[in-house]
Length: 71
Image 1 (cartoon, rainbow, N blue to C red):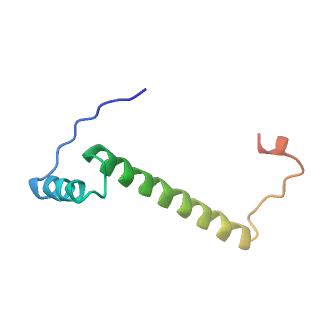
Image 2 (image 1 turned 135 degrees about the vertical axis):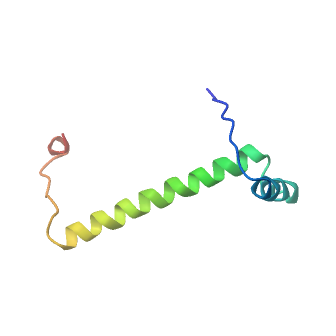
């Protein structure tokens, strides 16, 4: 299922998206926006993982005996 979102942005941003789409880097403007979202999502996950590793190094981690301990 898909949802249509309408967004507002400055003309300069819209022109850059149009340029990238015309270069062939993206199939459509929507694909450009989806790509940005995926990159943001990946960066967010990376930062969470980095924070978790830091907490483990600082001794704040919890050792689990089984997957049931996650609940």
